[in-house]
Image 1 (tube, rainbow, N blue to C red):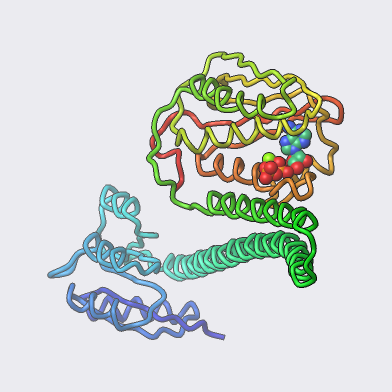
Image 2 (cartoon, rainbow, N blue to C red):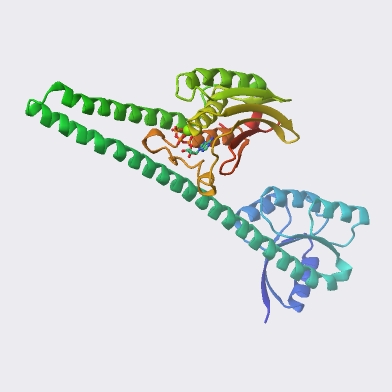
Length: 379
Ligand SMILES: Nc1ncnc2c1ncn2[C@@H]1O[C@H](COP(=O)(O)OP(=O)(O)OP(=O)(O)O)[C@@H](O)[C@H]1O
Ligand SMILES: [Mg+2]
């Protein structure tokens, strides 16, 4: 059975064209041919004709193979281009192949034509199949990314709903109590407790909202700057100290050990907030006091800053979930957004967070920054 072939033939000689077509027919092709001789005709064919292969004479009155090849390539069509010429020096042949011609065949050796065409068609089909698969892969990756985003959004929405419900249910209960009390002329002191509770609930709600707002702030307002991680470590300790003093955790100590640390491109405010989050977690983890150490250092892959505590550490099931938005073991006292913010911040900086912990052995969170480059930050 003959194999159909849609051919674009760039050839000025009627006789040579007939010769080529006869050879193709002899080896089993049923050829549909568009024969052209000029640049204008080539452009027209590229625009309006379907073909699977170009056979091109090397020299024509107003066109030559290198120019034709250039035009075909510029059109973006991936069709094999084979030169068929009476005379082609070795140098020209090599040059053409380098430019992207798939093969060259001498007119007095037409026996090579059939196998060459067959090979080119097979390879071209394989290339097209590969391109199609790559495109499909890209499409399914995009779909996956979108669905991951949706899933994250869904989890976030579920978390917010859960948090709000936890706040609103007791709020409504206390309101009912106060309402009933007022109706029945209850003494002021009886209502006081509910009012205090309601205020605490509202404070918690406001805190959650503030955290969420900071969390969802996509484009950071301030520009990245070259910052010294050691300066940041000192600042974080200063910010945290009064918090510890005002807390029952006055027994905790905070120190910094400042090793070599390169300058890194970062948004100082955001990173400072991340470190303070880590310090506050460490304080929370050690109600009876303990030691918190902030360290800086440098490795080949970039600079780091870490917060280590001597608290109770975490069991694996907590360790695995700490970066999840809304994951908290602190009940109503925690929003569970602290570490999710730290994680998002480091992703934006093109860096990473690592955590080393075990039950009874404290916890160490380390923030990694890539080596300085102005485009380290993804906004
Ligand atoms: N240094 C630490 N030691 C032990 N457990 C920790 C430490 N840091 C975080 N965790 C655990 O990770 C959980 C999540 O922390 P994250 O900062 O995200 O939220 P949170 O501290 O519970 O709430 P919020 O940050 O709003 O106060 C904490 O509830 C706690 O169980
Ligand atoms: Mg926290």
